[in-house]
Length: 241
Picture 1 (cartoon, rainbow, N blue to C red):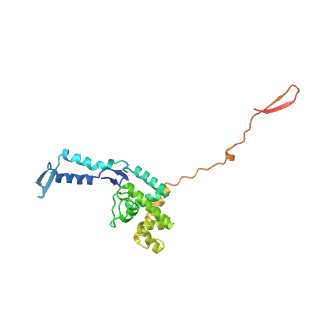
Picture 2: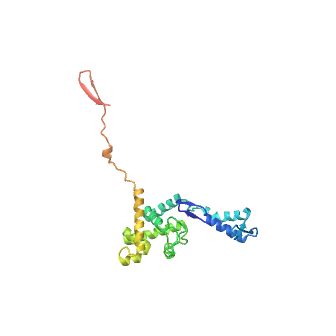
Picture 3: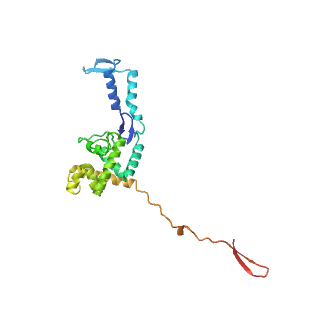
């Protein structure tokens, strides 16, 4: 199971919780597991499950095998490259995509909201299907679907604030109110995304266009040294090398 270590901002392997879950599953199903019960100092009974390493280790390896799939996004560098590539295809600022992801899920690819929004860009299942996303917890599919949907909102409303509001509340709500809907959640969402977007733009400003000099400005007049001499008849001659 792939997990995002949000506190460190980097992709990591199977989490301790998932490994514990696999261990519990193995303990419940393997005949090689032994169980002991002892009395603690406080008088309560403590049950201990012992699983031999040769039983659990192969199963943990198998459980982690999907992480090695070709093209898997397992590092922040790979995720950043995916965002750059996808945003470039859709002509969307990748920093805006980062601001959306930061606000929506804090880069947790398995985030699930109480409304059912899923993954990095918190796609509602219906929206995901419209964007051609089959698995919202697949990082690549989620980002591609989320950026595609964001592009549609930008094109429909032509206003960054309205597009961000539509990403949160839906385009019909923005159309109904002809602007940011008067929902506390959406108003706060637009503010947080906008704030993060501004921070990223200040942190990573666009590179200034290189000054283009004209050919005339680049070409300097050439002055060749002048030689002078007198011929046999005493006439002065001037020439350049």
